[in-house]
Amino acid sequence: MIEMQLLKYSNRLDNLYKKAQIYDSDIEMLSEWAKYLCVLTSAYLEQCIRAIFADYVSKKAHPSISKFAQHHIKNFQNPKMEKIYQLVGCFDTAWLENLKINTEGELKDSIDSIVANRNNIAHGRDVGLTFANLQKYYAAVQSVLKIVKNQIPSN
Image (tube, rainbow, N blue to C red; front, side, top):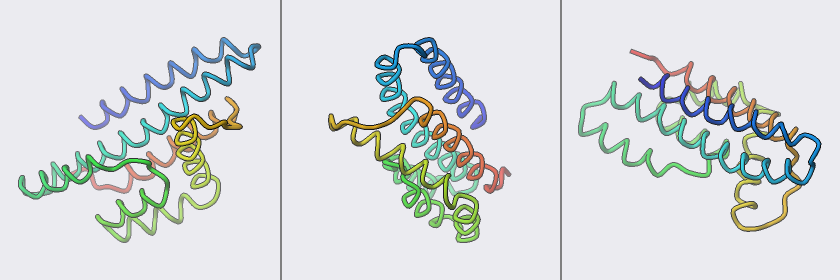
């Protein structure tokens, strides 16, 4: 179930990234696509983190505890790495340590850049975001999601 949901989110973004590439020779249009895709990529990360943990608690916790946890997970937003660390740490400190080790450096910086750029775009500020950088950030988002998903027991 969760894999299908995550794949649906990913496929939608993958298709939009491909569509944007037709503007490769139009720097201004590609820049506008980068802004749009940055907002969607940040939302994608947010939705996937929520979905992964909501699925986990629905499978592992008593229904009333699951309802409580899902209510709090629903409010998870602006997924900078520190906030992801905090959420993961609420579930398991070993998961947190593994995540910190595996996301140090470029992955962490990429996630933080996506969210910072999204916030600047949403508030009408100029950003120096290029489509090429955004593609790297999107790959980092995919990597972080894979790390998070793979460390959570599926049964």
